[in-house]
Amino acid sequence: MRQPSARELRAVVFDLDNTLLRSSIGARRGLLIAAELISAELKKNGHLYGQRNLFKRLQLIDHEMLRRKYLYNRDVWWRTLLHKLGLGTRFPWIHRVTLRYWDAYAANSPPFLDAEPTLRKVKKMGLKIGLVSDSDGTPGMKSRRIREVRFHDLFQEVVVAGEDTPRVKPGHESFHLIAKKLDVQPRSCIYVADNPRTDIVGAQAVGMAAVIVKRRGNQGGNPDYRIPNLRALPGLVRTIQRAGG
Ligand SMILES: [Mg+2]
Image (cartoon, rainbow, N blue to C red):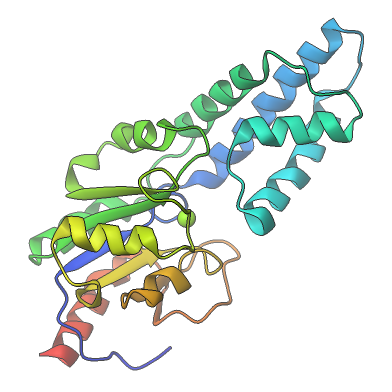
């Protein structure tokens, strides 16, 4: 980790999934529901694939789409599965599976316990709060999920990358846009997030400092700072401000 560099902070911008929300259980529940629905639909046409089998295959596709391809449209995930099974492409029920997936995902992704208290502390410190989160691949879905977060009113501005901007993260446009919406210089912002692959280079490209909060299995990358949990954030903010002032 680098030494805190001089920076007059005016805003803290957060990522949503796995930073503020414990989304790993929701993601698993979503895939289980999808496997169940797809299994039932296929059965109607005489194709017998057990839920367990489909769930395992979907886990591999999830990994491939999130880690390598940055493809978040779940319709595409289910089509990829069906293509791999050699079952063609005409599935009028496919988007229904996506909607049920997101219902299960959202219902099982509660906030981390340190999320809301940290946001309130940061706000009390006089800093603006923003959110930059990638599109869920279904237009409007991420905005809906954000509105369902019980403390969403603490976000002064929100950018859904890939919907409000041409590219998802790590494209830099969403970071540029949130700074503009918050009416601050990007250099006066830190971006607090969990994923070294998507959450560092775009923020740094516009001049923000990238802070990675330790969540499950997220080593790597070259962030400006790492913190063990969100409770450590106010202390880091003070340290950066002291270095800057
Ligand atoms: Mg995340």
